[in-house]
Image 1 (cartoon, rainbow, N blue to C red):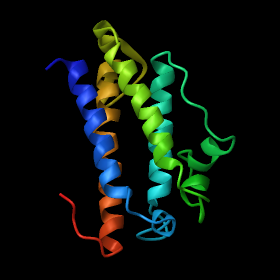
Image 2: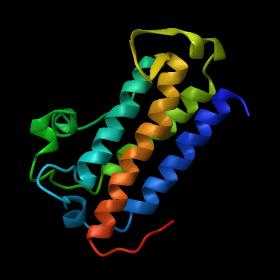
Image 3: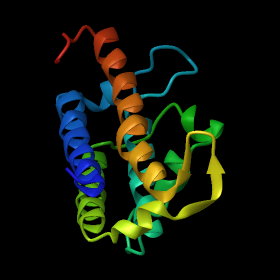
Length: 161
């Protein structure tokens, strides 16, 4: 399996897992928090949409349209993560799927040489574009799916895996 094939696999499987954990949640449950400072599933999904959107722009793609207030609602800022209401969440997974499908196609077309390009602002856990893409498609996504599993358990839902 090539690095690109591995990244595509992570993108596909992680999105299927996200569906597994949120498709049966009601709008009220999408807003449920484990404690006052924790993220709700609605914010997590919106954040993941914005992450895929960011990656799409880094790959030179034009991401799908979002509502005018989407980025403000789901940005990674305390004012957004602490919102008490994200409104209608029924469209969130449609947005996730649209962005994820486009991201998968963009990664499939990626020149493998791009993976070795150094980042302008390296971080301790990733220094190249390939490491960055692998981190966001795998560990970052899995971390947030893990948060959703705890939300599900606090709602009395059984484990799914």
